Every structure is written in C-alpha cells, then in structure tokens.
Amino acid sequence: MAVFEYTGLTVKGKEAHGVIDAETPQAARQKLRKVGVFPTEVLEEDARARTGGRLVASLVRGVQLQHLTLLTRQMATLLRAALPLTEALGALIEQTEQPRLQRILAQVRERVREGQPLATSLELHPQAFSPLYVNMVRAGETGGSLDLIFARLADHLEGQLRLRNRLRAALAYPVLMTIIGLGILAFLMAYVVPQVTQIFRDLHQALPLPTTILIGVSQVLRDFWWLLVLAALGAGVALRQFTRTAEGAALVDRWLLKLPVFGKVIRMVAVARFARTLGTLLASGVPLMPALEIARAIVGNTVLARAVAEAQEAVRRGEELARPLERSGLFPPLLTHMIAVGERSGDLEGMLMKVSEAYEHEVETAIAGLTSLLEPVMILMMGAVVGFVVLSILLPIMEINQIIR
Image (spheres, rainbow, N blue to C red):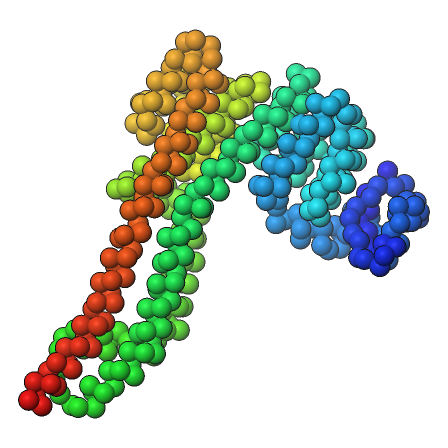
C-alpha cells in the first residue's frame, strides 16, 4: 500500500490537504470522496520526492520541538490504551495539524505495516527523530514496554521544552530592550544629531571634544552605515565558518566556559542536559556505552563532549564512570559524587535524574538573577549614552551664551 499526498476541496468549498494511504491513485481518490473531500491533485509521495517537490523541502526543515513533544505524549496515551501500533499511528496522522509530521508519520506507518520495527522506521527520518528518540524506542520494542518508553520520552521532551521556554522568556525582555535601544540610538546619531550639530559647525568656532566626537560618530553612521552592516555580516559569516571547524568550535566553547558569569550558566545547562539524557536512556533500558555516545552528542559543548568521550574509553577499560569525569575537572563535584553513589547503589539513572532536576532549577535561578541584574545595567548604559549626547549638545550652547555676554 502506497502513501499519497492530496490537495482538494471539501463539500463547503474549503481547501483540504494531507496524506492518505491506498493501493492506487484511483483508490485514494475514492477514499477521499467517501469522507467528503474532492481531490484536485493526488500524488504518490515517492514521486513527489523524486521531483524535489514540497515533501523534500518540508522534511529538510525538520520538526519543531513542541510538535514532537505533543505527538510523543499522544502516542504514549494511545499505546497505554492498548491500541495497536498501526492504529495509533493512523490516529496521530489524523490528529496532527502539521503537514510535515503527517507525511513522516504516514511513511513510518507504511513501513511498520510492511513488517519493519518502529525504531528502524523512525531512524529513516533523522530530521524529526534524534538518536536518543530512536534508541529509546528500540529499547522499548525489545523489552515490550513501548507505552512506558513513550511516556518517558514525553517527560524528557517536556522537560527540555519547559527549560527552553523559561530561558527564552527570561532573555526576551533584555534582548528586546537592547534592540529597541540600539535602534533609537542609531536613529538619533544618523538623523537627529546631524541637524542639531549643523548649527554649531556653521559658527566656525572650536567645538568641545565631546561635541567633536559626537559629530564624527554621527557622520560615520550616516555616510558608511552600509559598510558597517556589511562588516557585521562578514564577521558573522566568518565566525560561523570558524566554529564549524573542530579547532574553532573547541576554542569558542572553551572561551564560553571561562566567561565570568555566563560561563557558569552555560556549564550548568550542558550538565543538566547530559544528566537528564543519560538518566532517561538508562532508565529505558539502553546500555551504558550507547547511552554515553548519545549523551555526548547532545551536550552542546565540544570541550565537555571530548571529556565524555574520554570517559567512554575509561569505562570501556573497566573504570567507573564517575572517576574519569572527575579527573577531567570540567564537571561539577555534585554530578560526579551523585554518579559515584548511583554506581555503588545500582540506581545510576535515579541519581542522574535528581542531578538534572537540581541543575535545571539552578539554571532558572541564575537566569532570573542575571535578568534582574541586566535591567538596571542596561538602563545605566542607555542613560550614559543619552547623557553624553545631551552633554555634547549643551557644551557649545553654554560657550555661545558666554560669548554673547
């Protein structure tokens, strides 16, 4: 049975599109007419993929985390209700409103119907399902606890989504204020200040140093703004290319970890991600070595990832996990101590989950503190800039008044 993508009109004249499985295009059209959809185009997905159409373009963009989280939670609920896997996938295809997910799920369901394992079918779509996701599903299929695995996956993804949303919410106000402040400052320097300072230049008198600096900066912004924009874009592209190299990424990540205040927050975020991922995988039945490989890939910092890789080699030689992590000096003592306790007690996954919760809470507290600190700092900086502009304009006016007297 093939999978077709269709576009058409409903009985009420509204546009409809989605995916449907059928033996032939004619059978697909008949199924659509039975549900009240009159198709204008029915195309097999394999054919659309070969023509480089919308299917390929949509799959390359990937799937957003919130959509994947909702899908995973729904899948856990359906499987817990003892619904067969293919029927659960079909229900998800009908319920999701995201065309990309519909197409991916339709292809996954088709391969499951052909007898392939669910994990193998998901693995063919890396833009939507990460190695962590695939390996946990594989462990659930092997152990016969797929509903429990999807529930744990949903908890894991919801935790990631919750942390990301809190970080975004905490940083939204400072970022917005910075953008607005820079925009207002650029407008003043490029358009307002030149008109005011033109009066002083027409007097052909020596101007105070702050006024001269203000006029010079304003002139540069007005005449060479395009050059500054190109330079900023060029620097951004060069930095991006540099960070794509192994040496560049390691250098930047090492520098980020050494930042006075933000470095600690970056380290805590990476450690929390590592602990939660490793704990979730181990709790789902994934062996330690594959779990470490997956956790290493999602740490998000090449320096810490190299330390995890060295720990993998040490574990392969027979050492306990806590010792090489502690020797690296990159992981906080709380993590290594909890891992050591978990290895001795046989509850490593439980200790890791507790560590991740502790560091996620610490990250939220640190971000809240930084945000409250950034607001007055930004106000002071903007006040200093505005004060400099006002002083630069008032000084020549005061000199003119003295000359007139």
